[in-house]
Image 1 (cartoon, helix red, strand yellow):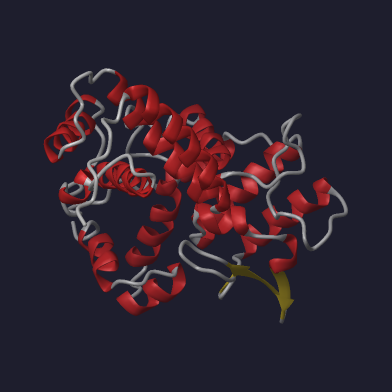
Image 2 (tube, rainbow, N blue to C red):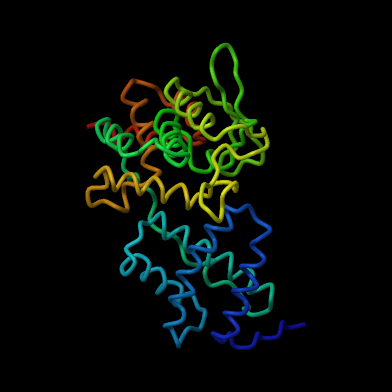
Length: 299
């Protein structure tokens, strides 16, 4: 039996289905939901100005050109933005609004040929730390976050998923159990550097008594106090200090919170660590990823 052709997908119906899709995303982890909502928002803005939109491969290719030329996104970001459209269109197919998914025929950005985020120098790290005023809970928290990212190479997702109970003491050192991207449990354990231990200790002392089940890094805003810090909130704080310290220096897109982890990896490479050491220390799966970092430091 031939599948009936779906009715034309009007803008009004698309907006309703988009609202349904966003509600459906609430079953996903907060950080995943936030990424899908943010990246798909750009497509919804774009499609409002496309009265001839027919949901074809050619239309999605035009959207891709918009991301690259008008929005000037990196190839990696374009891949992520197109992925969110692809998943949304899968949802539209399930709802009978589309017969097929044209986004699946459009490839993402070009392959990685360089790091999309730059590392920063030792002097810039010092300037960044000096820009953080440790006079209140926010200052102590943000200082500890930077120390953990630069000194231990922890990622955004690892930091915001961490709980106080994930910290353990062993033979005079502080260890933390981590749940990275794509992991379902806190399977990795990292020993914190002395500086990171001290920064974290000062923050927790300032915060006062807390239960093991509480987030390690909490929001300190009036409306969100006590809630787990979000990826977006963490990035905004780091970007604030990077700007305040004069580290961004006109490269807002290439120097971000991710630059701090990149800096930790770069430092270890320059100290002579081999590929296996880097993979283990920074929870990296692919050799190719480490080789990319190594190639960027062979100058």
